[in-house]
Length: 610
Image (cartoon, rainbow, N blue to C red; front, top):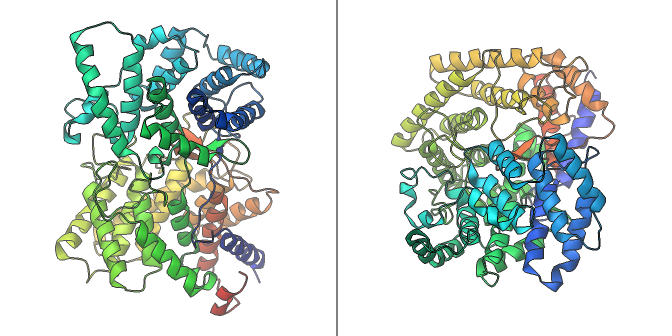
């Protein structure tokens, strides 16, 4: 049998994927422990001064000491290259939590690393460096600088040199944010309020009419913040955001505030057995939809009827049926996790739509969910034809900026839904979906680089010169377009355009395959299982030899370890342990299907150990 080893590996990986399913019947995954999140969490707990947290603080402190990079800096994950922001935050946390001189050597190593980056420990240099890195986006730079003040790295008197956050403007209707040219949109409202109030108070008691007026807005702003707290207590399920808000409110004299109490309890629950914290609770919805799509048409061989039914019920229950209480998003979308701090986005929503289409049985509730998801996507589309992540908007920040990988994902979801539910979708929405697909294709055509690549927004490669990851972006979009072309695309000119873009994308991937058969962010950089598997997905239908080289390279890897290719809010790197497994399965499945693979076992194997 020509592909016997590939078949065996595929079946073994499918068995592993099934084992990863949690008792509730979906996949949770596991985000990497984060030095940045750990630093923020221990400071938030330390400033609260609760004796019950001493062991938690010590465990986090010891995790930080044990995970310094060999060069003396810290990266966002234990496998990430050192960066200034994370190193400064860890420095602040260790200095603030230091007991009897422990950690002095670690502090010295960090000082030496920062000095090599031109950063001396004076407020002017530190502030300038952080603000330059994040530019006009204050959603992360100002909280970082505020924590440095809390920890004594920057003197309180220097608060006047840090850009203020207009917390009082959060009391206005969201529609007027654009008028005031706010650099912080609704997803960062907790930081805008919590950190903004803290900075206002740290700037001193000099009496002025403006200060007196701003003082009057503190109480109503805190009340608004209380109403934004999700049931879990974690804003966006994010440890750094929740930690920043909590520490700043405590510094502002609000330690008994319900927002603080819920936030600290959230942080306590999120600490891991190793003492550290991840950046977010999990990406369970995302890894669940990725897992289903990885199995694709083979899913009924791999999962039994009960498991498939549970997956559908789970996803149907996660769709937002009412406007979202945090950001006011319309009903119909899905967020990245099943926890209450999640908000709907334009990658998880098409992922859920495509998963429901894969598991489709024709039930009315499935039809309603898919139709409402499609309506949500169409309403979100930006004027440039692309899909943003969270909100239709200004295109200045990652939250509202169109990007290629999400646009390709949305295009595929709308096209597949239109094909399968053509007679069920209302005529008006069906026409809007067709126009949306055309506009999305136009966006992709405009943003495909001359060499055939597309750049993703929420994924990157730390080793490329600009930290972008054209292999990821190109692989994902090319795969989406290939799947569109395998389905019904009624518009001939659109089909031709998709074919043309796909051909250019495949050429880019072929040209950027390393001699050893792997792919990385760009040629000349060590390959990863994730990027190699995704490239195989994109090339499976047309480039057998390139795929085989990639498969052989993966097979030679002694230990498959997740790579930090994901980017969280404000350029935070993460890795997800499920990515290598999921992407391998999808790549192998697509390759084997193209080469006439059929399971040698019958469908009842779904009830076996596989």
